[in-house]
Length: 323
Image 1 (cartoon, rainbow, N blue to C red):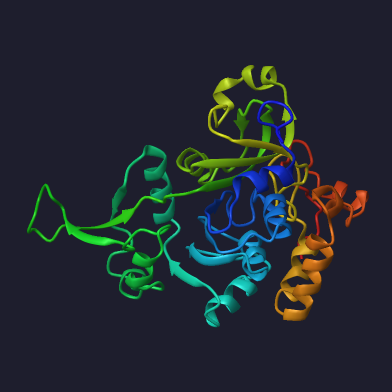
Image 2: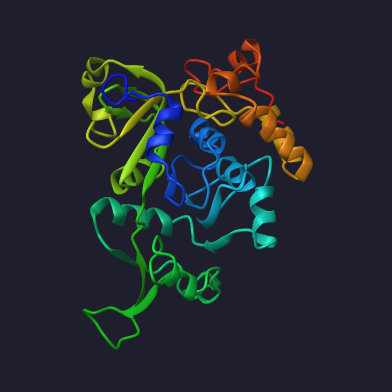
């Protein structure tokens, strides 16, 4: 249940807004400001048959795929950069045909999200023309037509209607039709206003383009705090459906002006995710074996978490062990 304005606890937010079979998109970018705490809760609640996408995925999608929550993946990149060049559960699932997967580029998917935010049905691009991203589809047209959550085609190639017959072709890509957007921000008020510091990635567009939006944040602040510098705010209160306070909610990834990467954890995950049994034990210990995000954080000492806090004036931890 909602407790104050749009403020909710994590369990209730996921239960209310994430349904089996939903088309869900995660914000952040690769190892920056990923909504990991929400991903953990989706796994705890054993959601299934999700259509998952982002523009620069990492451990968030890898965990969801490995836990069996994902049926279809639409993605351009999935890696824990610097630690795992290609996420291992994702790679295994694609190689063994455990999920349906189609590939895009890192510059095309943000355009699809921007089209969704603008309420457009499709967007013309040049970027993928002439590449195997067009000519070797991962999902068949039959599957696109079968699934009501997907467009009936991945793309249409068409001449420029203002200059037809001149060889000026465009790839028409459908705008993403998203049930739920999940993002992690630094500050939010209980009424829904949000502020993102540092890299914003695709978060504003997916929040605007999705039917529902769950926002986890490092800190819930008063509306007055955000209204003092309104030009620094990114989402108005009418966009999010749920605001969840989750300190270290992007762990083990960085959150600008709050904490840096947890290199030791990411290095261990690289080894664990390569082995089926070790990965199952990891899920049992860190996700199924914890009732909420607070219990997950209790797996780490206070000193360890404190060591990840950024140094003021630097924005990162100068002496952090990253390998």
